[in-house]
Image 1 (cartoon, helix red, strand yellow):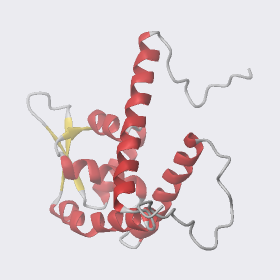
Image 2 (cartoon, rainbow, N blue to C red):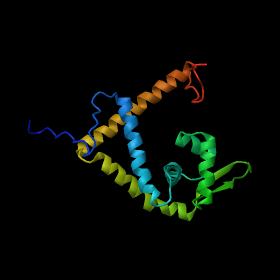
Image 3 (cartoon, one colour):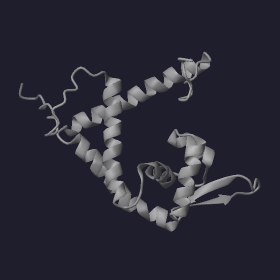
Image 4 (cartoon, rainbow, N blue to C red):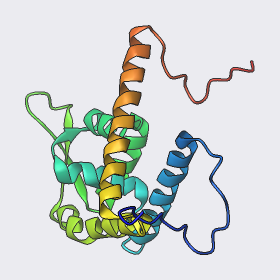
Length: 177
């Protein structure tokens, strides 16, 4: 039919077929591919993908506590603490005690950390563009909207499970014991 958009062609050099994979597995593989693509680009500037996660959050909102950053990144507080310590050593963030609770530390970007936004964000755009090449703009937007719907469905599922007292088991828990 004349109005149909052409199907996207898989990247050259990758003969593996994903036709029989479930959506969840495909999304996981895509996320891994996106992360690796961006990580390669960030490495040229001495930034890891883990650091990118926190910088991206802080570019949107500074003054967050370690707990706030942990929740925003969907990572554990010890992981966040380690990343923030490294970012502090790199001179990209600083943590300050805030009144009235002097024990409560908030994280702020340094000028150097703030300036990296102009350098690093185009790398993320480039990684996205590479991944989405061959997909027409209208289908890209529909994919984005579909993924937002999927995320909303999964959030609702998790909320319902938590309301019933069901939690995600710890990764170190063994069901075979």
